[in-house]
Image 1 (tube, rainbow, N blue to C red):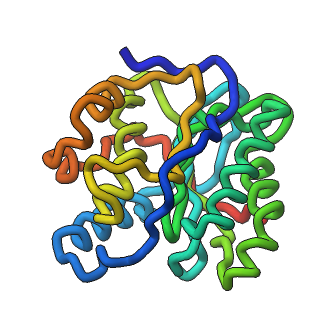
Image 2: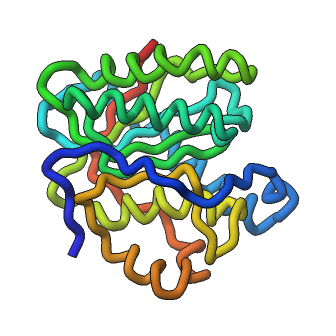
Length: 223
């Protein structure tokens, strides 16, 4: 059964070495999957203006490199982004349930605390990571995408979707672990059991993105 944590911070353990070559750009099948995922991330035409921050609510967030330049998964950059997420978790402002850093974007499934608004949390994350991004010629997009989860949303499917990002992009093998995936210690998902025993099933790579209830909000500046 899918279990979400009541609180807690991401697990920052030792993971296998990173693999950040962009060979998937030469792989037509992987590129097709990557484009479909990018489209899911950027369906801004369906968004509703305005954003409501609800303490205790769970949000699925996507933050993107301004020009979609790859580089977030460089070890220094990815570690800094994940560290910034952990820093938000410490005072309970935004508690990550799962997070994954990809070359040009990051996904976070997190629970909002009662001290700061959602845009303030993302603003803090972007501000604290701006120096390392600048050092590597990268820049955050001024806005971000958020979806507040409703009871009808399939949390398992959302977490699996984020988990599969590097596999869909062809960046690692089906029996390898992506070093920039994190999960709260007390979160549990059914898909993990299958991955632990037999790796990522190849048919999962063609799964459609999860259908989310229509509660998306438009991007807003968070610098």
